Length: 281
Image (cartoon, rainbow, N blue to C red; front, side):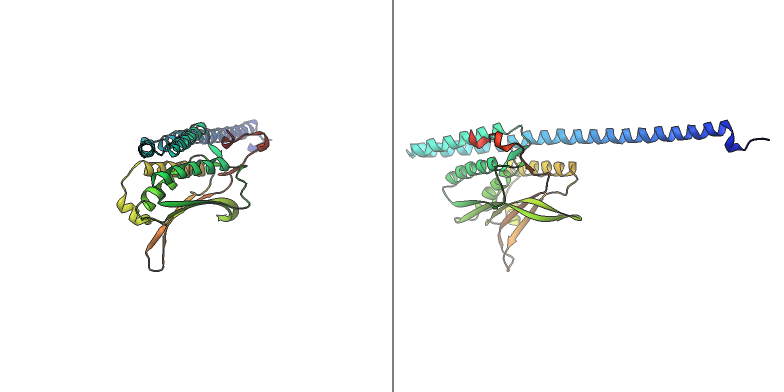
C-alpha cells in the first residue's frame, strides 16, 4: 500500500525544513530588532552626552563671565572691596561646581539648589537688587537624596531674569519650587517631581517681541532636547510646559515654566550616607 503523503519521509523533511526556516527567520528578526534598538540607544546616549557638554558651555558662556567681571570692576571702582571679594569667591565656587558636575548625567537636588543660590545672588548684585527670589521645597522632598538631570534649571532662571524681569521694572520676583505631585501619564498615575520656575515679568509673548536669539535661548533649546531624548529613551512624554500668566483682562502677569519629572527622570540616591555631595566641598 502506498503511504499517505503526510507519512512520507520527504514530507516530514519538508515540514522540518519549513520549521527551521521559520525559526531562523524569527531569530534573525529578533537579533536585527535588538541590534537596531542598541544602535538607537547608543545614538541617544551619544547625543545626550554631547548636549551635556553643550549645556556646560552655555552655562559658562563668555557673556556671563563678562558681566560678572564688569560687576567686580564696578565694586572695586566704588571701593567696595569686601563686596568685591565676596563676589569673586561666589563666582569661583559657582564655576567649580559647574566644572565638577560637568560629566554627571544626574546631580543631587541639594547641589542644584546650592548652585541656584550662588547664581541668583550673583545676578542680584549685577541687577543692583532690582528683584528678589525664593526657592521652595516641599516638606516631603528630601533634597539630599533626590537626583535630577544635571544643568536643567539655570537656563530658565536666566531667561526669566534677562527677558522677563529685566524689562518689567522694580519689584520683580522669581520663584523656583520643587514639589511632589501625582500626575496621570496615559493610564497610570506617577509621583512626579514638579519643578516650577515662575516670574512676574512681561510674559512670553512680549518677551518674544523684545528678545533676540542668544545664548540663553540656545541653553533652553539644549535642555529641551536633552529631556526630550531622555524621555524618548524611557518611553515617557515630553516633560516641559510653558504658561503665560494673565489676569482676567488678559494682561500678562509673568511666565511659568513647568518641568515634570516622573521616575526615572528623577532618582533616589543609593548609599547616600557614604557619599559626599558637592556642597560639602
